[in-house]
Length: 240
Image (cartoon, rainbow, N blue to C red; front, side):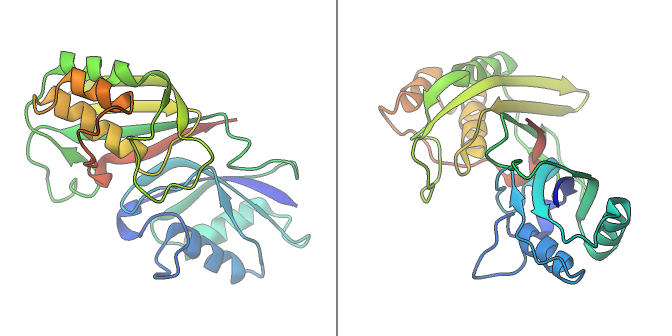
């Protein structure tokens, strides 16, 4: 039986989502270890991978269950007791044709930051920038909307047949002392979101021009490869 699960996790304690040969301290490794302890020998598949330190509020995974695991509420409860920093929010039965990654239509990321000093309880979950121009930030974010070749906006090591992605929504909002950047797209390349955020904030802080951003987006000149801190980034929602 194939199941679809909505999970949330604190990425600060893990070296990213994807399983790695060099460490077992990844989200995928922790979940599969917990499943194996319950005699569930299944590989999990996620809607996408997140970098080390990046969090999730609505990551989607799928895996296959043996017939004796029919009580999904009990399974969720047991897994949540076994896992640290990872929570199963929902587990539901789904079609065998469902694929957490390939069935996804849209992915939404949320980035949160402040312009004043972070408390010790915020530093793993919120980023920090200096004073910035909100108008310039909105102009920079608007440049990303639409379909573009993001070959100059990802880390090396990306394995994909195309670097073209469509950004449906790129926006900025403020709630009190907290600032938020949102990106929704049909998919993202490795570290693409963090690189776009850092470039947009460079424009907003006056260290990079909108023209330079447009040149990089057109794959003409690579002005920056810096990445925003992972601490403020959350995979918020997946749409199918």
